[in-house]
View 1 (tube, rainbow, N blue to C red):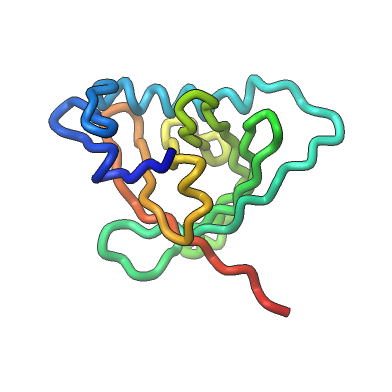
View 2 (view 1 turned 45 degrees about the horizontal axis):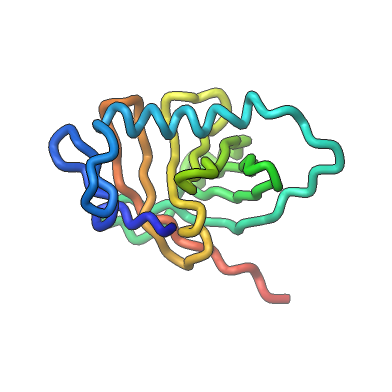
Length: 155
C-alpha cells in the first residue's frame, strides 16, 4: 500500500483519514508511529542477519529545493529498519532504527536516542524515486516532507 500523505492520508482537525476512513486522532496516529519505531529496540538480534539495502534518500521540507538531511535505509527479514541519518548542515552522521508494521505497512524510525521525533513513510513508497513522508514531533506536531531517492553513483 502506498501512502500519499496529503492525498490518501489526510489530517483534518484532530482526525487522521486514510482513503477517506477515520483511522485515529492526530495524537493516536503519531503514537502508533512511535510504537512501530520502538519495536526495533525490542527485537532480538538475528544471527547472520543480512539487511536488504533500500536506498539513500534526501528529505526536503516544504518549498525547499535542496536536501540537507539524508537517510540510508536497510530492512531485514523481520521488518527491522537500520541505517544512518546524515545532516549536511552540522556534518553529523548518526544511527537510525525502526521497523515496518506488517499489517499497515507503515515504516517508522528514530535517530540516535531522540525518541520523540519519528520519521514515517509507507514501505512501498520507498520503491519510488520521490514520495511524501511524515515527521512526528511528539504527538501534537506533524509535518509533511518529501523523500527523494539519491541515485547510486555510476562507476
